[in-house]
Image 1 (cartoon, rainbow, N blue to C red):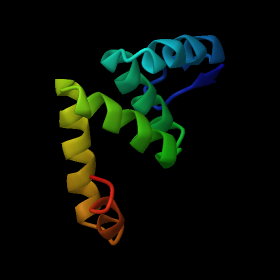
Image 2: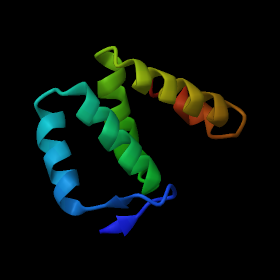
Image 3: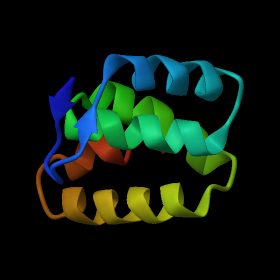
Length: 85
């Protein structure tokens, strides 16, 4: 179990359940995993799951992705992001 930036406790059991649902195509679970991996600063897995949720039209995922891209475009990392989508 760990504490995220918002003071919420996260646990491995929840992560496992989310992965099962996400792998079954649940866009909300995919979005939740994306947020979890962004908190953990695992950008590879963040990109994997946010892309899946966005491709299914998950509105919150689209908003999150747009905000993330906007921030990254202001840095040198923006060049990398343009190759992902």
